[in-house]
Image 1 (cartoon, rainbow, N blue to C red):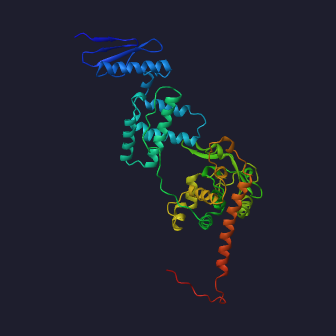
Image 2 (tube, rainbow, N blue to C red; image 1 turned 180 degrees about the horizontal axis):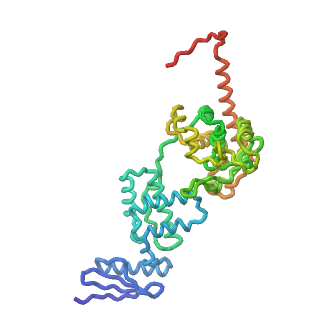
Length: 396
């Protein structure tokens, strides 16, 4: 049976022995190409050709051959070629790619990815017991990778990551510590780590930021702390010095007056005189403290459990500090500056922490500490004085 052909101004269509219709057309480079699929009717094939002709005329046409690259190959290159990624971010991206994206989609060609495929991939992840939070992180990474394929490399016309709500995490609400609980926790730490807890809470510092502090990063009178770097644990490389988590992470913080004496005492007791000496080190070699070692030395899990705070994370100290600071009555931009969060306007990213707003935050935090300490002193003064014959108070 001879093939039936249809002639038109751009490209041509022909009916194959199967009864389906094939569309062929000249690309911008003059090379004759076939549509990626067959059509049920001549009219459908011609409509596809008309759309393709319009795309070529508008400069929106994409070579379908380029879309044959597999997601696994493209995603691996995407991570390698991202400039300025922090080591911890690279580690996270590679883990998400290996564990949650490549497991199902590695061999799929970019051009064959559709919203339906992505939706099914997400559903399979959740059905396999992967948390909603991790699945959302993997989805956002996949979307970012495919955004590059659309916007920069012109491999895809449209990003298939269009699953409503898939990028949102419904993480469990974290506990908000009180000032009294933070001082209680700090008091249960080995003395050399007491101020580490206080600075993390009252300075809204991340673990990598507080563990990287040096003598030169702290005022001699404990009035300010400068954050300019962070320590990151990278598998196979150990601790690596890098920039803070975000551009706005580079900042100077006013420390509440109520804990400056604690900072000064720590400098005198545990920090070497050299300006590059780390603020917090282990007992022996004087090396930087690794997070797992910190948890082990402080018996963190057991301590927080005894306080009735089972499951408390170190990052919850920063969370508490952020909450307290938000109650100081300052603007959103000043609060974001203190927390080290990126702002949409670049002019606000490197706002000086010597501003009146930051001093106000520090003063409010200091008031909270004073109220806690005064309250504790008042409790002691209220105890009955019976000449040493006070009776034990029954518990329970």
